[in-house]
Length: 303
Ligand SMILES: [Zn+2]
Image (cartoon, rainbow, N blue to C red):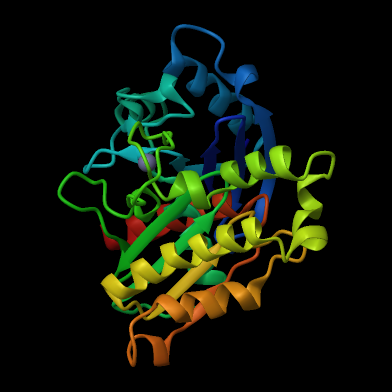
């Protein structure tokens, strides 16, 4: 018998791991699990595998699930029913995820870009009030970007808005995960930092590179490009708040002051430069799962 309390099942789909949690109304995470993708998806029928993964988890949760909310590292169709393009989880592309799961579970299912789920968490955690525009740049393996307009993610004509990581960099010939050539993400994301660590600072664990080589011009250039990405978005949108998050800015001895200095350098004067609010968000394993639950509750409320 399930207890009377209710929860949302939050899921974060990654290229290597799936994270899943049951989140109660007070945003406490009741149960959390991190599972390798290959332990979830092992047959031709991807949606069936996903369904079984959810059933497995949900039977262990003592509360009644009132919704399922899933974040994908992907572009999503405008109606938020399926994954459109996802270089790290190709097996999820073009499948009717929302409909399939709603038919199976008979509760509302929400799907969204993972970065928006993370953003929901940060909006709450940093007490950001509902305002016209809040933007987030998350530097992980790639660059996640979210634009929030009056408390909701900006969708765009095709649902593909908020991809600042894919602004072109003049002269770059690097091929990006999205298929284009010369995207900023391939020069200012964690994947590039990894390459740099392997090629230029051989033998040093990546977690140490800012500590040991913080003044190396190649690392400074990398941080400068991160700042250029953020400044570009600020110059276009003049947001009320700009959240900076992800694994890279949370690395040990990340040169935050230099990053801030560079961001100010490239933002237009006198405004938005003089009135800039940058919020540095900490990185947390469960944040996108809790954020997914927050997202579901918000969508339910505003439906
Ligand atoms: Zn790209």
